[in-house]
Image (cartoon, rainbow, N blue to C red; front, side, top):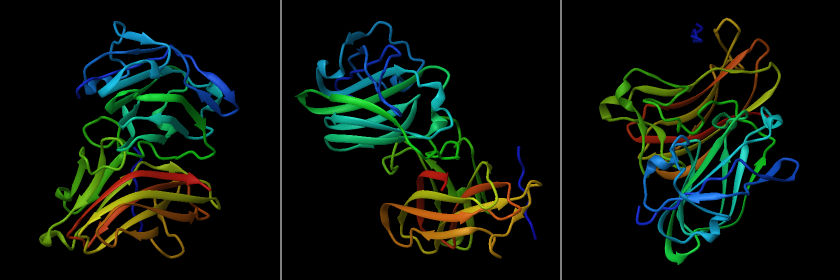
Length: 317
């Protein structure tokens, strides 16, 4: 039987660039330019539309004093010919000591020690025909420098076909994701310290009474080509799992009917078999002959524990 798919802190510091960058090499730009900042702390400063016209400016973020919380902002434009070529990677040379980093108001990563940072930026979170805003909320333990060295954006050779792969788009529920299952009480979209990056993750929870239930977070449809191999990746965190936690790729034909994959409903891999912190799992599948679309599904079955998912990707191999 086929299933139909319906298409349908203490001190705060902020800097903003002047839509300028230096192209260092093909596929890499340095975020270089004039920065502005403001003392005090407000999460609203991650919003790219927040008015920063009255803030002080520095030639480099390292020139600004740092102690306690500091917000750094920088506006930039991307080369138009980067669109569709891949996701981006943000490289921060030196950061002291903790950070929460945003692109266009969407969280892309955080860290809890001083040093380098490397964060993936999904292409779906970027504007290729206008302004982008990078904002970093940094907590510096000792007086000194919060950010130092170059910040670089590098074009990768991998692009996730998923929209909202980290569940960070700020809407009432995760944009581009659908909760499906027998009991909607098992689903949650969490904004807490348990997330892997950014500020949000999705989860599935159960009780003894719900142990026989199955719930899934399903992505929007994505175009696929028969014969091509695709990879799904997800980070999973589990607490007392008693059943199966799987990542799946489900294929559909042009009419929206689910297509069997080697006589199975989906390509599937079991993750989160035991209580654990965030771990990464990969799954590979070749699109069947009559496949036109695919979805990534994050599934919990026969599970009375709790599982969280974050930073999902779906790429052409």
